[in-house]
Image (cartoon, rainbow, N blue to C red; front, side, top):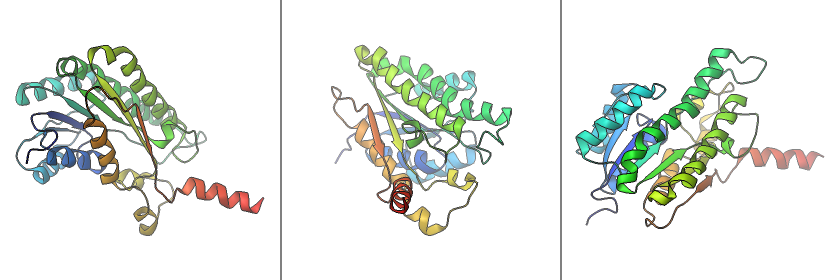
Length: 252
């Protein structure tokens, strides 16, 4: 039986691990041909191996606009079209609070979490207009709610990414292009290794898993063309932020 995305081409950034890898596998299972982008070729090839035939590794530094443009051109040239973009690449750093932030850390976080997704959207739009396609941005709970855990630069950049997604719908809905932003709470991915305070395995097991976010991505991209899922806000059932607030309330 044909999958729901048979005949479609998807491009997934940050596809070498975590949410990007899970999304790429989920899209491929539904029949899409999948292009995989990230800085390092080896993790992309690992993801391609998990998918099997139809996966194309396209290494690129997404903070370099010229490399992003070249990557899109490669995807369209090799796979013939572009219907779905999962703009997932992002990063954080252990040095998060204003008291310890350095200029180079601020620059890296803005480049990776806001400028890179903007480059991806700008470069992909011509192909998405032709296919009346969809772009899904993986932002964060920190892009909807201001908190201290992720750090001020990450929070600001992810808020910007949420706004970016909505502006795409404002300007491009007339061209049949849809934009969805997914805002997950804590997800058990390698980025958790950069937390200043390391979390035990049982805590990470209770978080969202990459496959949970991939399922949200798949939901958005398999909606009919006349329906746009503007935002998806998803968190672990055991939301540690809420639990901490309730504990403080009980003491007050």
